[in-house]
Image 1 (cartoon, helix red, strand yellow):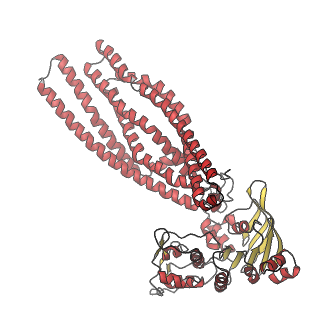
Image 2 (tube, one colour; image 1 turned 180 degrees about the horizontal axis):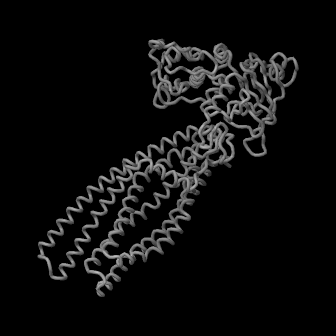
Image 3 (cartoon, one colour; image 1 turned 60 degrees about the vertical axis):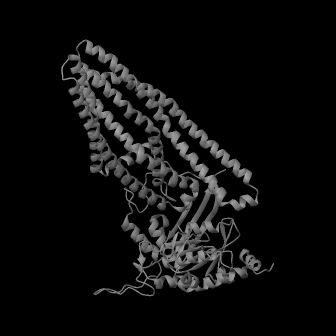
Length: 638
């Protein structure tokens, strides 16, 4: 059974308010679109009025027969052409506005996704986030490009046509109201159920994506353990759930649309019957009845368009609610809903002064855990009462059997998870008070899970220096301009990242520090790697990840099996090479290879979520406890 917690979905009110704000950011464009649609609709009203006058003249025996018909036909053709041109201009302007709004929404969504804490992403699972990123964005894009312009055109046409009905004859507008009670009741029934139905439909797609992703990523495990039938059953259940959700949504539409189809035919019949009675009693002219009947007939097209687009609009609204929900996703360890985060003002912005002081304190002091407990599931703590102080510049090795809680401890020290109880502080400042950008600049976590992004090798390295640009060329350092004092070079002190321009020489130094300079220069810094480029072996990917760490230059590093993909000798050489670069920095190394512990200032032994031993290597070996047993076992002695 899946233990993932889905990302939140924004409430309907918040979704509507957000959509309204997006549209109103461009008042001039929106006004121009509405004006063009209104003019196009107005041109469409001329034809029925001219036909009504022609009927009236014919009945009275006036006019010049064929000449009047020709003039009327010519005028109708002119206004039809003008209407077509205005509609084209309105559609183009609407498309431009829609693409602009859609681009803003996509940029905001990408920003929200990238700002999600890793713990939140892990709890949600890949399926939910991937479905929101791909399918929900596609559904919303289709809605903005097709359903919204079509609905806008139809609504403006309906409004202008109703206005024309009142101008032609107020009495003739009342027969249209016969459909209002039916439409109101049907709409209330449909909209009261459709939002949840479309949300369930989107959630069912997320479950399918999640299941298929797990099956593909774990294909070797599935094959080795013969899990294919069980995975197929899981997929069948997910598809059956999606089918049921789709069927429920379609069922709502099959009830709603026939009712509304019948409702919007009624006004035509009512206008003809009542209009005829009014004309017989001299209350309205025959021209007015003719024009009103044609106007009501003209309403059928726009009303049909609105009905046709309702499903797309509801699906788009559900997708927008899911995308907007990513923005509302709680941060790891975030305060309760409605309360501003520490270091933030009431509007949610970072309180830069408080954050800066927190960074200043964090930069020069150590880490401390007091009474820390953490659980991935309720009432099942994996860390149980951890108390630990790590001095600035200290190298601490964390060892212990698998499942002891070592990686979880590393994640808490890196600020990825927040403790269930207790506190994790840096320089006396809770990690929660540091904004994500500030935190990542102070504490970095490197694990055995590495990734190569599609792009050049240089770009993959510069990921560690966001906002910086490549330097002036191989081995060349920018010269200071006249009157400028050269700033200290990047990477020359704890917690200092690369400068505004990262020269190739600096990239080469980082590669050399992790033993990757030779193969990297042979490949070329401008060689494409990742998808569509050169494939890197796992050990080279890990070296690339460690080179990024050298460039990022945080003052505290958490290394979680960071050299596990290297052979023992290469790992040993790499750690010795890094030792000089890591001088003066706080390093927490989580490893199974105990030579790391041998070189550390202190060793923390974890068992069952607790630190059972803490001290220097030699002291722990002399005690003859758990660490001594691990050391003897690692050397092949029992």
